[in-house]
Length: 54
Image 1: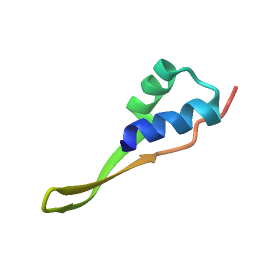
Image 2 (image 1 turned 180 degrees about the horizontal axis):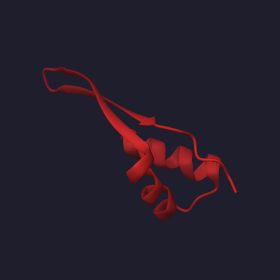
Image 3 (image 1 turned 120 degrees about the horizontal axis):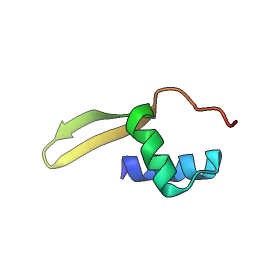
């Protein structure tokens, strides 16, 4: 869910297609595990640096 949400943000804010956002995310997005309690796991997607539009 975290990665899908980040891809949605990237497609909207950067005017990218989904495949373009996925390619960019592979090098610019970190997934961080924030909790692991029972079956519940928390994951955040963090964009390392915001790409600029050119």
